[in-house]
Image 1 (tube, one colour):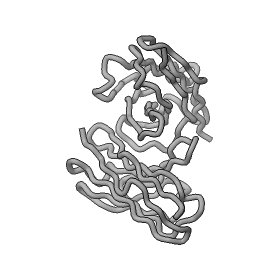
Image 2 (cartoon, rainbow over the protein chains, first blue to last red):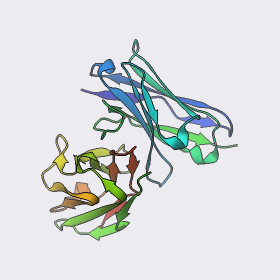
Image 3 (cartoon, rainbow over the protein chains, first blue to last red):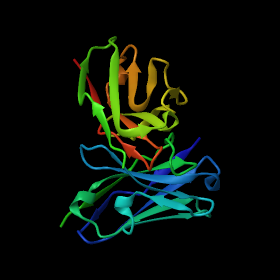
Image 4 (cartoon, rainbow over the protein chains, first blue to last red):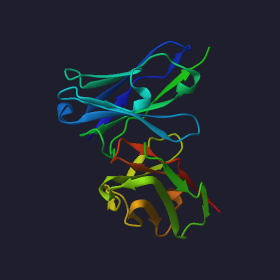
Length: 119
Length: 107
């Protein structure tokens, strides 16, 4: 079955960068894309963007353009999301989810990676 | 950006009761591009409904979705103990946005 295993908790200082990984298994990685969604403590869900695992096409939310980089490694079936210039309001749980196309609902999710930004 | 406003913020109900959750969009959303999720504490969201009214795999038929344009509804016909959670709506027709959530709690 489909599994998305995310990297461990990160604690970063303001201004730093964080890179979160999402390792996929149970399906043909190249036939789908990966979406990134975050959730601040006690808050709702926020879409960061999507990357195709076959041709690296990307689409990101306007809010994060220029600050987020999404990549994939088809050899290890792993997707990465790097967020730069971290601020305290970037503190959130970051989820990856499988998504064949950029704007779609998400049936398979990772368990999330907690990113805390604190001085 | 399409803003989704969910109401009520909290819904207090008893097991066995019917729950009706609403989501209003700031502009029209194609009915094919609307979804609902359930999230329990410490868990990732779970897809319940897509294309406004289609149930995702394994979702019980007590969950149903309806609506079009700017007004969408998730109905839980008879609440089971495991249904007490937070529910989010999502549109994916123009970029992708989520609503702020409705918490369904035990009365």
